[in-house]
Image (cartoon, rainbow, N blue to C red):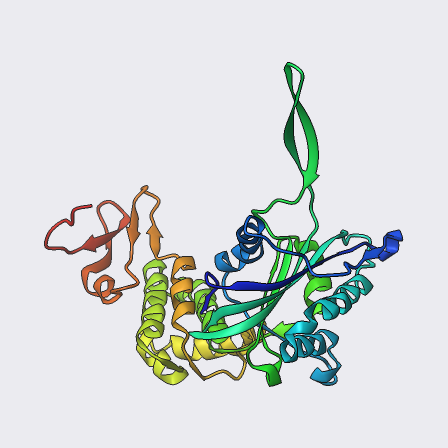
Length: 352
């Protein structure tokens, strides 16, 4: 978990990169930008807002030969070892980005290299390096008084509500390639940002495994449980799956299967499905891992727990108390009406 509210900007360097294929230049500032009380809160919010609103999917530096050959990893080491060198190293970082900016689709823009203190990561205060790029320019109006008239002037600038590209490199897990978050609003050139410039890969930690395994279960429910059983059992399987993850600190696959699958015939189906689909989710050999509570909470929001009927009626299950649906909802067939029905038991109606 991250907390960015108390983060402090210790240094900010601003440069500009063009597109090499269009013979655009690079501009490197001679000194760090001098922040003031007016601009500091605005620019801090611009840098960090997207990370607070985004799921925490971590990356780490990587290289096919050895981590020490990743240039940005080495630049990061230099800054964390000697924060007073951040501006000079920021020029090298910007030059590295410029060297990758040769595809015709890549836009020119401003590059910001920021050194932060007081980031809170996993309840630990850490420093961090932020690398951000603004690309899209927006029209906005300015007004000027000219005699007895108020005139409009159209100017261009960046939208402080939305970051185009950004990365936060936390000073943690250095030997493994640090913990890194990335945002990219312009998805058409993700390879340029993540692979060519940052040189990162997904950090396979408990957060990653929890999310991936629950997503895998969600698709198993849709592809196997629903055709074999019915919509109620699809929802109930995910109810029990989320409940298992919510109530346990660690995952163990055999225990999980015995807890969430009522029909024993579905257990070999689950294992076959995993063997076929697991590479897509990077969980091929995954049978045990610590459970990340934050990932469970996030998954709850994306998993549908509603049965939609063709009679314009919805039945909503409860992921907090999944046993209620098991005890108090029955499905049957009415011969006279030639229709299915759900029988719901209750003591009293709750007030809204």
